[in-house]
Length: 205
Ligand code: TMP
Image (cartoon, rainbow, N blue to C red; front, side, top):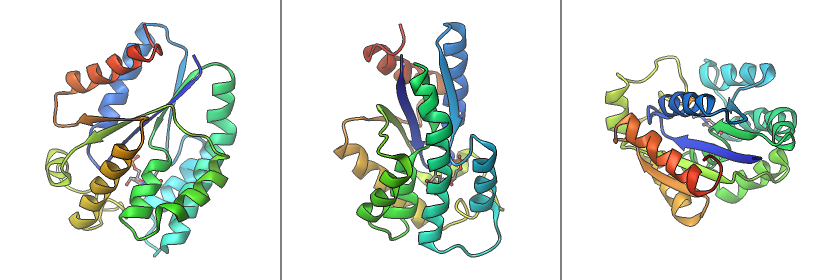
């Protein structure tokens, strides 16, 4: 089943835990899938990840968008599309909606600017389903035990992270491919909501 499913949310929303649970389920049920992440997934993309997350240098907002987009272009071309062409279910931890909110809505670039760059980077690839794990950033940071000190994006003010949340909500309301999940639910409940949607769409049995 060649479908492309992405996972979005603010820092500490529980995407990693959800994806671990989901992968365990898919493995048990012999689903033909691959999972990757953004930025990252391939060696050069992990190098870009390291730069955008941990560089101590200032990065301007347009350059930041282009770095995330460069990683995305590589991952789409050399990982996501080949796996979709092989008929696999492709899961991706973050995709261009992260750029729309982190570089766009919360960092002052318009959605049009971000989407113009994005369409070039992805050659127009759009996820089939996007799960958005919604949580108040203050609650999320308390849950994860504070911000990761070296992380340039996580370190931004709480007001930035509230803008990220607002941005996600605006996009999620507009776009049918979005499924909003309350990320304060237990990890079992969150996983069940995802499995139910994948069943409903005929992606898993
Ligand atoms: P994470 O995978 O641990 O969530 O780290 C990725 C970080 O990069 C996170 O702070 C969100 C940020 N990010 C962007 O700002 N724009 C993007 O396009 C992507 C994919 C991630």
